[in-house]
Image 1 (cartoon, rainbow, N blue to C red):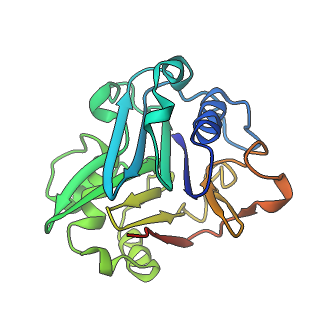
Image 2 (cartoon, rainbow, N blue to C red; image 1 turned 90 degrees about the vertical axis):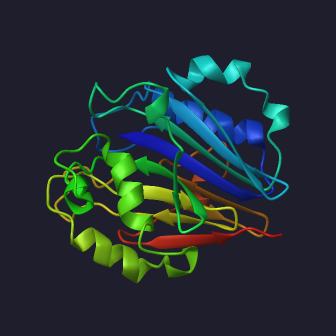
Length: 235
């Protein structure tokens, strides 16, 4: 299970990074889930003159943050992911998000919050190796970015066998990003798996938790289950 945040428009990179750090340490946790600490890797994705840049690491984001060159991260889009590994075997740099999968000439990046251990069944695999990677492939292999829609995602999620916790995800290409909220109707932790959105004339945030330091608490709204937010990047 993980925490993640994306920002678009005019924002402070340092403030967004600190928001991710606060979520990773449990400082902003006001939810029903048992997990407060997210120490098993981290990753950032941003756009630099139309090119996707990424940075990943292992361990805790709080320990890594002082060594990151914040000034080198520029642009009007940033996403950050901090991870709590559901399975202890899935720790290490290769499991840090964003994950990357190329399909039909498109490079798809994804940050995922949740556990979907049955998706491998749709990929012709005998068992699951890393559910998040399998989730990304399952979603994007059949489509181009033009095909990404709420209806498409609902159809894909409806085919998944029970046993997972959440499919919350940021899907990102060079031209667009999508924030998708999905968890089973019988989830025991719906608040933990609810994304929060803040938007004004200059900035948009979508975050696993409300971050009062970024925007007033009253300005955030809870996303609906099965809601899809689409962000388009200016050329």
